[in-house]
Amino acid sequence: MSTIEHLQRFIDGVEVGQNRVNIDRVFHLDEIVEAHEYMESNQTTGKLVVLVNEQSLLTKFR
Image (tube, rainbow, N blue to C red; front, side, top):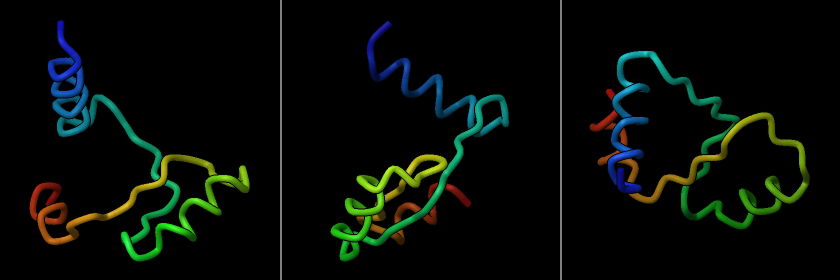
């Protein structure tokens, strides 16, 4: 199975509630310095998300 197929399988699991992702914080691309500093502080309790194109992301996950 290819990496793309693994990723698609994981995404499918998230969509049906089988896989869960713990998101700690969401940053916009213009906050990338703050996101990096937060990551390096070792205070994260989950994944960090950096929004590159917020509109397309919101459309996909709603």
